[in-house]
Length: 169
Image (cartoon, rainbow, N blue to C red; front, side):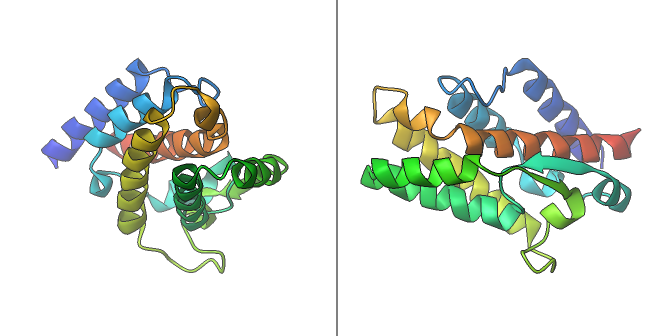
């Protein structure tokens, strides 16, 4: 338990040092991957029931499985350089914002439990792939089109860290 406590505090210090502003598409991918390379997904779960039930998050994707699925598809489109398809998907995504109770965010679309560890591990891998893909293009075009994904990932990261750190107090 002491090791997990130390790691959580280190994650928070690192998070606080990084300027994770989703609209700063130039630096955000590198900073996200810096943070998520350090994070062990099992340190972020389980999320305490009280936090899950009483916290509302403002996100573009209605739940974690949709975020992971959407980010996977987004990376595939970047790899294929499917610019029109990316722009169309981002335009649709920008039209909605969901205010979701964190408990429902950490569930599937039918509100059934999910394997949070598996999805956080997949998200971590998708971030590494994303960083590699956007580094292949000298312009910031794909990073700018990824800002909505960055927003949800930063929001998720902050809430997971907050939930765990509250249990230490």
